[in-house]
Length: 339
Image 1 (tube, rainbow, N blue to C red):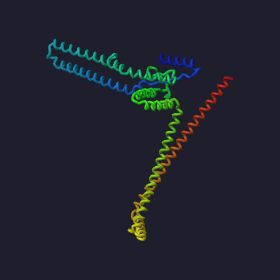
Image 2: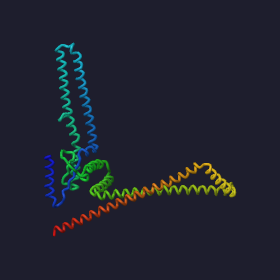
Image 3: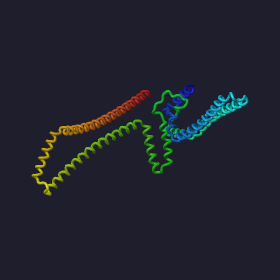
Image 4: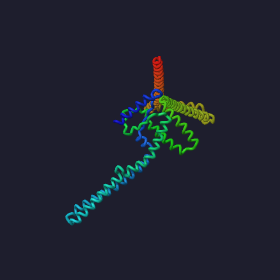
């Protein structure tokens, strides 16, 4: 609690001293979250866990050995002399002491687990600290706190969390080692765009809206393409049928009269079949209804997308207008204070 009060007092004093020239810029990180998302740390942690598991197995073997000796002594105690009993008890006591020493050596405060963890984690922590310093210098941060440390943060807005940016910086450094010069330039350009978006929430929101608009346009284009493809197929089918009929008439295999007769008979047969098979006619009607419903559903989806985009656009304009009004009021207030 004293540490927290001291830090708050320190930040307050600095804010008062430097607040006249520029605002104090403060950010925070979550070291545990960062380490969990760094591949090198995960690999090192897995290696250490394997070692710890092996040490636990050795401890279990020693415990089983001691328990076996105790059970054996308990069973044979009536048959043993006093000297043999004391000898076995001394052996058991020695093994128990050895077990305790082994546990302390592996899992004690200064044991192998703690020391090796420090050795494995330190290089990764150094990389994290270096990345934090680079971010602080580039973005002009005055303070960067660690949320996972003993410091108690009662509240911290998510927009001040730099953890993901630190992870991205570490990932970028690893990628750079595997890229050519051309790829490196492209990556740097992409990184600049990402950093610019991170520093401009309004731009990020606008980019999101543009992506949604693009998605809506793509959906509409796909629907139009599918409809055009369906029409083209129907046209090709009609055209092919017409060509076949013309070819048949031209070759003389089917006379015009017989063709008309066949068409009449086919039509009559179709009507008769429809009368005899009302289920088929109902199925056809249902298929047409389903097609109409599908088209209506697609149109509704498009309309909903358009409506959502318009609402987002309206909200952004309102936010901009409110921000502009706030700036004007602040400027007016400053002018009045000067007067």
